[in-house]
Length: 94
Image (tube, rainbow, N blue to C red; front, side, top):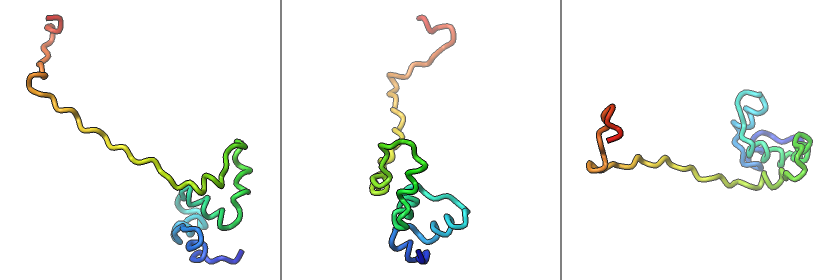
């Protein structure tokens, strides 16, 4: 196709370092970045051969850039002094 890494990076939105890692096999690439690269290289349909689910649309997956918002761990509920009861061994039935 004759594209440089810089050209492919600009067209796909994937960083040149990610493209270099993919070419050398050193490191990982996100699925979104892989789909963006395949789309720009006109190879997205080739990936359909890997997936067996005919209802899965990689084109839609490539367009989807929404991520679920991260959920924060809730802070531990504060116990008022009246709610706290000391547990004593053998006195649990009183």
